[in-house]
Picture 1: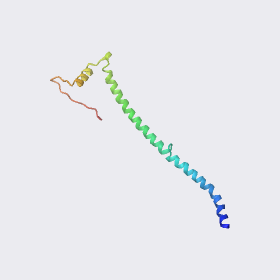
Picture 2: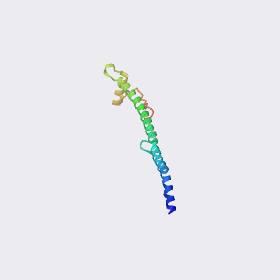
Picture 3: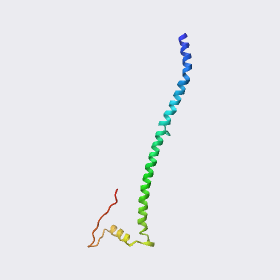
Length: 107
């Protein structure tokens, strides 16, 4: 009987630290691996950085297109731009002209 009593006494002494260590391990795991943990936070920061890079590229392309559209506005029409667009859309050139297609990098 004394062995059983000894085991019970030692179990009472050790149950608190084991429970505390278990709780610390649980929260530490979720701090790193959880839905709002450190790894999820790093992934989210990476996605934000990629989205900002994409936004900057799209804004640059949009400003380029807006400048080209401004040249075709009726209140201040650029004749060279009108001629370029008409020839491009109608696929026409004069007999003495040479056409050089210049495509932007990345397309």
